[in-house]
Length: 365
Ligand code: 5AD
Image (cartoon, rainbow, N blue to C red; front, side):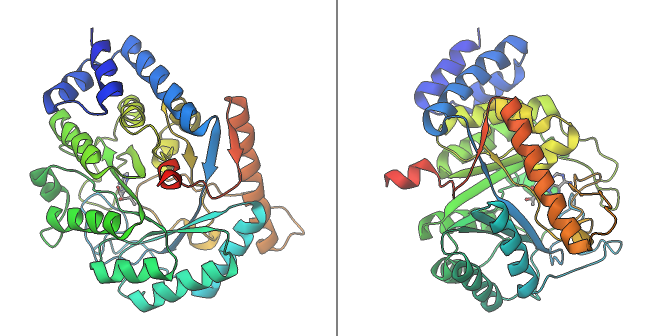
C-alpha cells in the first residue's frame, strides 16, 4: 500500500510531513525492497556502478563545542588532544594521492588553535600540491566571510551536518552555546557561496522520533544539498549519552534509500558509523543507495584519538610487519585497506572509481 508513497516520492521528490511519517512507520521487507530498487535505478542513472572515494584526514580533535553525543566534546578530559601540522597533513595528501585519491576531506573539531588564516593557507597548499584534487572542508560553524575566504582559497566542498532539523531536538543534543539558527545560517551561506554542500544527521540520536526525521527530510528537500551524510548514532562512553542505545542499521539503510530517491544525483556516503555497526555496512549502504566511501588517511598514531563514538572503525593496518619502518607499514596498510574496499565493491557489483567525483548536478550548471 505504501508503495504509492514511494511512487509519489520518486515523482515529486518530496512528501508531506505526515506522509514521511507514515512511510517511515510502515517499513517492512517488501517496502524496503521496493525502495532500494528505485534507489538503485536512480543512482545508476546518474552514477552507474561507480563508487567514489574520499581520503579523510582528521587533522585536529580539539573542539570548543560540547555536543552531548560527541566523544571529542570540549569537556571530555579523557581524550588525548592532537593537532596535525600543515606539513603532516600535506604528507597524508601526498600518500593519498599516490594511492589514487583525488578528493581530500579535511575534518576537525572547532579548534581555536587552527585559525581562518591557517586553514586558508592549508587549503592553498593542498591545492598547489594537487591542483587536480578537490578539497572538502569539515570544520564546523564559521562566519560567512570565513567560508568565503576558504572558498576563494580553493575549497570547493563543505560538510556540515545539520544534526536535526527540529529546534527542540537540536537543543536537547547541544548546549545552549550552539543554536539551530546558526547551524542553518551556515548551511545556506555555504550553498550561496557556491560550495558543494553536505548536510546530514545521525539516525537514532537520543530522543529522535519519526516526526523529527520527517523534518530532516523536509529540510534536505529545502536545502538541496549536493551531499548528505547520515549514519547511526553510536554512544561514546565518556559523553552524557554514553549509556544510550545505538541507532538502527535497518532504519539507517531505509533513510539512505529515501534520500537517494529524493535527490537522485546526491553524493551519498556509506559512513564510518554505518561500517562500524555492521561488518557489511559498506555493501548494505551501497545497495540502499549510497555511492561514496571515505577511507581514513589520518596517521595511525593519532587515529584512535578521533574517537567520536565507541568502537569507531579505525581501519588499522595491524600487519605489524617486521623489517618495515612504521611509515611504510602505514602506507602498506592504507594500500591494503583500499584494495580490500575495491574487492568488496567488485564482489557487490560496484567499482571504485578514480577521479574527483563531483556532484553531477554541478557539471550541468
Ligand atoms: N555517533 C554517531 N555519529 C556521531 N557524530 C558525532 N558523534 C557521534 C556519535 N556518538 C557525527 C556527527 C558529526 C559528525 C562529524 O560525526 O553527526 O556531525
